Length: 198
Image (cartoon, rainbow, N blue to C red; front, side, top):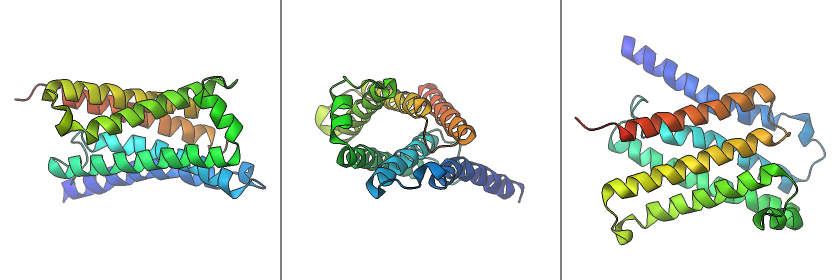
């Protein structure tokens, strides 16, 4: 009974950390009067930040009911969802303002957060390509794992910095919470994967 209560409490806490930033951003008065495509693109980015928090938890073996192969399956699923959300984020903002996104992708945008957004996007695409081509690349498991962790951590950290530097719909407190949670979850996953097996 005690373990069940602890599991419910942990899942509730994780759910709140993931959902609250999205809810606060969705209710922001800064969205009033904005084009639907701009709102959709922006909210896709907020959702992606929450999935960046959830994804590493599934391989850290700390969430009840998601250990072993189950956790790995959820890790892959949230990775695919994160990639789709980031593509929707960039695509939505591109439709709204092609010039701004083109400048960002060409690394000539005047806004510093754009650079981190591009770094995160490239690292995420490389992470997905590495995961999809694991069998064809025929890399040694240790090398593949190291590259995967390096790229995934780069994508997450760049995404965190990108979100942190933007003054937008996300509330300051909830943005700080999800950024810190995503960073801690990533560090926890890296520590778990680097731990020698017994």
